[in-house]
Image (cartoon, rainbow, N blue to C red; front, top):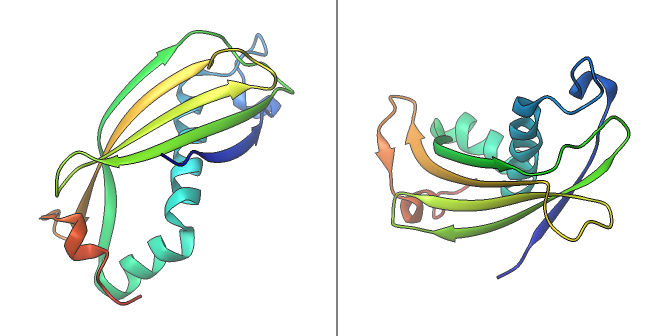
Amino acid sequence: MKIHHFPVRVFYEDTDHSGVVYYANYLKFMERAREDVLGIDTLISLWEKHQIGFAVYTVNVKYTDAAVFGDQLDVRTTFTMDSRYRAILNQDIWKKNALKPSVTGIIELICIDKNNKLLAFEDVITLPL
């Protein structure tokens, strides 16, 4: 299974008053990595041409080590299909030179049209962009 790497630098705006990354911002880091995996041009084209998008169905996140202002992070993403309708993304956030991830996340994605109708991934990936 191929691992996608997405670098993130922690800015002051990502932190709380103590300089530690605010917990919800890890979800933003994961979202940026997912957009990078899927390709922002692909996502825009799917929506503009077919009114199809991806939605987060469930999120399960475990925080084990806080990142702080100035840290260099690596969001590592692997992608598997759970069914025709659900993709599983394992997303771990690692600090530079760490022996274990600081944050682990399991995100389930679904594909929907503009009316929130569930679509099979196999039908979407065959559409012309």
